[in-house]
Structures are given as structure tokens and as C-alpha cells.
Image (tube, rainbow, N blue to C red; front, side, top):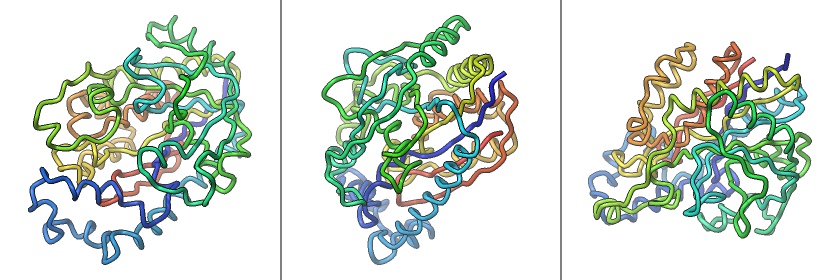
Length: 355
């Protein structure tokens, strides 16, 4: 019988950038001419938004946000070190990175050997922000792999009736998916990911679904949205992600290994929450699911539909549906969590440990 630790955390890219850049996504949205001015008017913002924005565009609040996230990340890392896992299995989204027009799998096990990761790719390429460490943009670290274990989990999950793709080599000419690269980077923040001792098996989830090609896993201006998007087929449903997590949990339970099962994502994202004009996350919807997680109420989670998830900008939370499926299957209980709410830093963040 295996031993399992459940971990939920964020791979929030601006955490790797300087404080003055942490609110850049909001600053960009404020320049969108198709967002009505009344929603951009700070007098109409919530008290929290105005407080965070301050008189410096969020720079001071960013320092506090960073400190809170890093403290929670430290708690997760200490729990992982205390547990001493043989391997980390990490659910993360592929944001138009490894998978593009050629193929978009709902789920894919990345059965890779040791992989060289450029952790600042998304930061410099997409966000145009220098890293907080002042390191060269082409800095690398190695992510240890465990391809044989990844293959065995794939076999078990397929035999359990859940269709999952697999990959033996990463796509060439891309930055390694940041959901996984940032997970190692942030868990080893002081060493920039270079001294992380545990193998990592990434489990890619098509969280972006109808927007993965249409928006290239990123931000769309309202002029493009209003003109009519050529949307893609949906990603896997929240319930199917929960079932995938349960199947992974059963495989891990039979493995005899010590395994940390990790969900890597923030919760609702402002740039995906069209109803909020890309200015803020859907905190009310996030709060309802967080409260249900605290109560161990998985029925509420399984009642969420794909449409509700997309409309709330909760695309990446499908990774957490996978984690909670595994926790439900294995009977692990929430032992610690933190809930970090923001109105200006793009996404609410949750951290959790299940034992």
C-alpha cells in the first residue's frame, strides 16, 4: 500500500516578476477600449480593489501578496520534505504550449526523462517582465523525470476505463509548460528550482478547452470576443476530471510508492472572466467552492458544469477537480489550507494539504 500526500498550490507567473509588474494584467485590461469606462472607474471598484491599487498601481500590495504566497509555498515544501516522496505527480494546464493545433488531448501523462526547463519563458515572452532574481532570461534548471512510473500510471488509468494520452518527448521549440516548470520553481524559490530533489511526473489537463486555440491559452480583447470567436471543443468536464483523479488515486494506492499528488493552479482568472470585464476574478464562485472543500463537500464540486467553470473563468481549477477526486478515492482529509483573495492580481489563490 502506498503513502500519499495531497498538495494544492499556485503556479502564478507574476510571482517570478518584480512587485511593480504584478498588476500588469489589470493595467493591460484598463487599456482595452471596449471595456466600458464605468467599470474602469476606480470609484466604482470594491474597497479591497481600491486598497490594493493604492496610489502606486498595486506595487506595495504586491509585496504583501508575494509574502503571503511564499509563506504558503514554504508550508507546502516543508510538508513535501517531511513526507519524503519518491515522486510528485502534478496536474497542470497546458496553456497552448506542448499541445497546439496538431493535437489537444483531454489528459496526457508526460512520461519524460530528465528535462531541461527554461522557467522564465512565459514571463519574458508573454508578459514581457524581467524575473525578480535578476537572472538571465535563458536561465535553466533540470526537472527530474520518472518515465517508468508515468507509464505504469498510464496503463492503470487506461485499464480503469479513463482515456488518457501519453507523451515520451516534449514538443521542440517551446518553453516547457509553465504550470509544471513554475511548480518546481516556486517550491524551490530560493534556489530557482535548481536543487529540487524529487522526480516530477506532469499530468497535463486541457483546462482551456474552448479557448485553448481560439485565444491561444491567453488573453483576448473584447473587440475580438464581440466580433465572434471560433471556439474550440470543450475540455474535459469537471466531473470527468474528478473521475480521472480517482483513477490516478487507485493506481498510486497500488504502487507501493510514496507519492505526492499535486494540483498546480490559481482559481478563477480575471483575464478569463468575461463577465467581470477581465478586471477581477469571480470571487463569489471561488469562495463557494473553497467553502465546500473545507467541508469535504465533493457533491458541490461535482455539480459544477463545464459551462459554469468557463463562465466564471475557473478553467485552470480543473486541476483541483482532479486532486479532489484522488483525495476522495483515497480518503485523505484536508489538514491545512489558506485562501488568498485579491481584486487586482488576476487570480485568487488557494493552498492545501491533504493527509
